[in-house]
Amino acid sequence: MTHHILKAIALAGALALPGAAGAQVSISLDSPPDLEGSGSYVWAHAFAEHLNANGMEAQEFQRGALGGDDEVFDQVTQGLVEIGMSPLAIVASVDTLIFGLRLPYFFENMEEIDRALLDGGMLDRINEPLAPAGVRVLDVVVVGPATGIFNTRRAVETLDDMAGLRMRALDESQIALFRAWGAAGTIVSWAEVPNALQTGVADGYLNPAFVPLLFGHTEFIRHFTDAGIAPSLRIAIASEDWYQGLSDEERALVDDAVEAARRANRDWLGTQDAVIDQLREAGVAVVELDDAARAEFQEASVVTYTEGVVSPEELGLWTEALGR
Image (cartoon, rainbow, N blue to C red; front, side, top):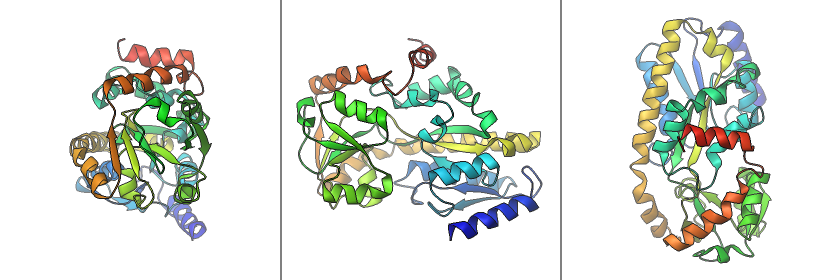
């Protein structure tokens, strides 16, 4: 099925060159189309709505319809898909500066992140090495409050409670973080997470509070620690060839759509306080870290900043962008 879809997209690309009048903007979603539960979809939908309302046709493609994250990335770099809602790591294969956004306990809130990206110039710095690879980050998308600790086994109230847990990891840098906390990590693809949690391959994961609700994991996730570890972020990527092939007027419209989507996404974040109560209603026990416990996690995390996350030079750039 995916093969036939890709062939259709390639044919469409041949018939309608990027930037041509009447060309459709394809947006590959990375979550269910839930305007209440998915910040990523809020961004994508607001972006599409702004384009459609102003004469540029945009169409949303369901999560997985155009392939997985890697396939969508390849299509974006080739100009076959214009917009992809994607994980941070997808562009880190080209340059790792974006991983500064994953530093645990580095940012206080989303306002700090926007200040670093926009006022501090970090979004431009991130995009500079990406252009030759055919991709650009249009925006950084918040998908929930700061990440916490989910697990199937026990309440995590202090750093010591992490001992003996084996956590699902995104990559080696997250494994290093778990090791610094006294736990173990194992890399598991998102599609395999439910099976891993139910069979004991992994005991838990780091994610914002809404994730088990959105993906139906509350049947086996039993504990959540609201640890406020790092911002919960995805990115909206665009085909660089498509973006540069737009007329000045079209590019201004796309830039306006990005701003409209960013506003909608940040406004949505302010509606997410009720998610904790929804977790409790679903049978998940919630722990709120006290200040002393949070300080333990923060202190243990600092040693990982340049251990597979960013280089010392990249850390310096992020620090400078925040004016620290």
